[in-house]
Length: 276
Image (cartoon, rainbow, N blue to C red):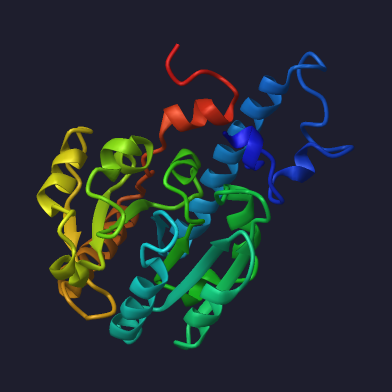
């Protein structure tokens, strides 16, 4: 899968493999698997560094993951409109091409840093670190990372963030958590989006969607909302308030939180079978 789409080597980690790069040569000089495993290790190291930056400045970083078109940018627009007076917000945008989503965020008066990944179907910690160099973290309370639209790969990479939120729109099918378990296992919160369309859909059952999530042994809450119709947003805002309060409490205790990273997906990226 990822050997085809090219997400193993990205603009963020390519320097490690180039001449004089840290991973120019593998341990035995030949093994591609060793290279990929080393890239994952380097990613985790960079992610830890990113998280230290966030924590030093008291910033909560949230990774938004979903398929394309689930409403991530619309959710951010509604969130900025409601909470920009309460929290200082910035957004890191990941897309293969264009700055379309970043421009929508900037139109709300909020800083948005665009990462164009080219052929890579997910963000990695090196890309996010490069974006952080364009932000003064002391100026922010909350940073959203809008990951590339993809229901598998983003869950395999620690970006240095604190929480994973997975969006599922009602136009996608209520069995998506069962069909794409890697993404939904990693979720700290599942947002059921575009729920205003349920009135005209006869093939999406919210209870079945939640049941599929529970069958993954994931106790994460599921919230239903429509960002464009301003429905169900208060519960989402309350979740954010609680997450920020909890994060500040952890930092006062010298602690942080590390997001769930899916080992199945990581093994795929490392060239090993997911199920030996």
